[in-house]
Length: 368
Image (cartoon, rainbow, N blue to C red; front, side, top):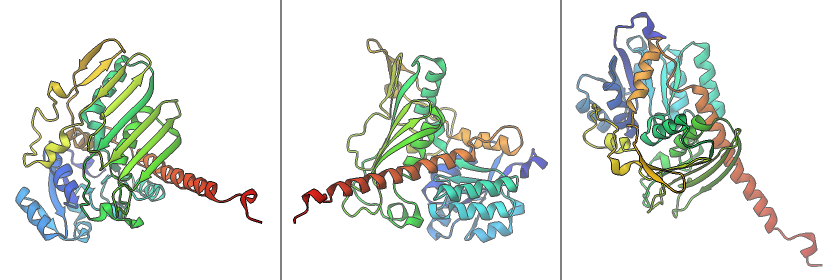
């Protein structure tokens, strides 16, 4: 790995893309990580380039990724946070010039494309790390703690929601129906929901999906439900929608001994989208009124939330690049998530074909 030769030097990071992901979900966390330095921002959008210069005056702003490949020796990591269509292509280009990569979700447009990235990274002995930051959501970390403590008993059902109320179109590639864009909620928030379920409960043997376009004129799914049956018998029910005027609980987890219900979503996204993105000592903490509830059917008690900790992704990544720790997320996990997304689309297609077949008149109904 590039930085093992000089572990005392800061890890020099190039951020490829400076839209919402780069400006809010990567830039602030990179600069808050000890031992990391945001060296370059790559964006061809002049307004975003101006924002990058305002936010990070010492950073070099490049208009093309080719500039970065030509100056790869001056960097130790490339973070790919562009529109989905370019994730795999840019990752492969970075690997070809010897740069480790972090790739925002979805890791690629297809499982096959993701496998190609992973294979190339292994051949070149370079990391290719999925950015699954919601493994450090407050609610997720709290649930993991409860599971480790054994208070829920064997988990029977896991219900998880990431819902929004956005009835108006925002436009842009995320709402485009073009296959190459890999837009829509399944690839967007669905990536997080699936990753959390897989990390908590392991491989999946059955997938059922409902992928709907609820808003008039929608080109891709804006309302998603997935039912996963894990190999260990746990059932995960996952929802994401932009038409939830009233959001369901963020988590409802049913175990043999007790249930855990968390109404409120993690607060880190809102903080990173705000004007004040400073990752300080109280980052990710929740007030007690946002804590979840543990109940055995008779008694209820409020459960202290673990602080959300998106910053830990880059802290663990820095250790990995110095050869001191394993990857914060394994690339094979992203491949498994994409396989589930593709199985979800097959589930919908196969069910539709059955429904259409049922609507055709049988030979007994034919008019002589």
